[in-house]
Length: 61
Image 1: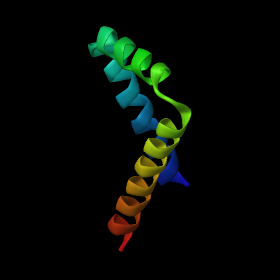
Image 2: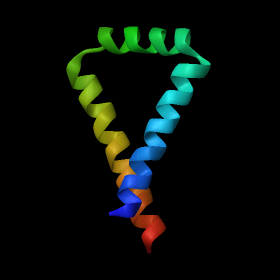
Image 3: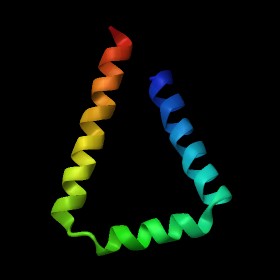
Image 4: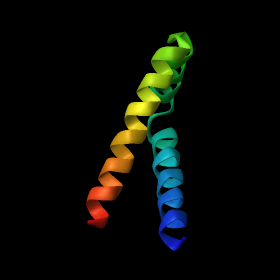
């Protein structure tokens, strides 16, 4: 459980760093995401999820 909490904290730090360092680029990216169709976003999210789970499994074994 500590690992999960640490990972969530790291995500928060990375998101905050991106917003702090490049807020205009982050806004442009968010605008592009709003223009994308939902199925494309769902597919991209699924790929990122599978990649993250694969890396997590690989790191544990």
